Image 1: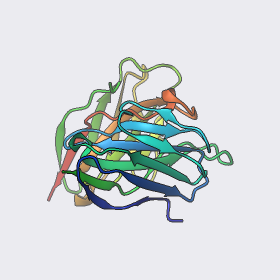
Image 2: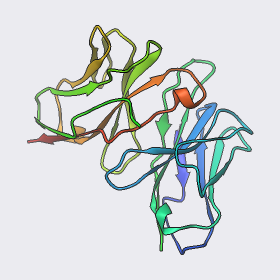
Image 3: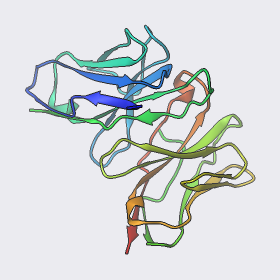
Image 4: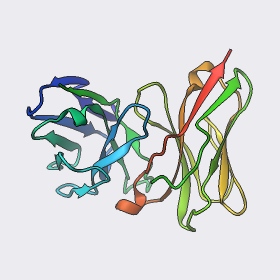
Length: 115
Length: 114
């Protein structure tokens, strides 16, 4: 089991460029989440999904879009990157119908810098 | 905003028990207390959770007061590798929506010293 993986690990963008962050999980979890973490701060929820084909806004959704076309993948898109989106992005997944456990497991993070 | 209050930092000697407090005075009856930690800049790692009874696993023990307004995470024999930011979070368990989401505060930075 790889758990939760994130691609890429690092990225540098110029203002106005677009990119997609990919999160994949192999634990058959129903729920998936995208967070951002700024220096010295706790994680803040951007968007989340409670199942394939569904998405919902979190605390800080502006400037981001997401898609959950497959149960195991959750994509985070930045259509026009801004310096304020420089951050570390974490993906997480949770909830297994078989065991009933809903502990969130996190990926290693993607460090994004927008110049 | 986070529904918990934690001290910003604590020190602990290696090999001693680390006791990390958390106040959650507005906790609801169906909310659990969760603890996560974040080592350096890695993804947060789940430690333990509980509702009202004390809990223990291979990593730590969780002591919840009878009125559930506060709790303490205990690392019985802290090592240098336990140096991390520890987050105490209250949430509804098993709910696939906003009530079940994790809300992270700033946590407690635990420094384990030789």
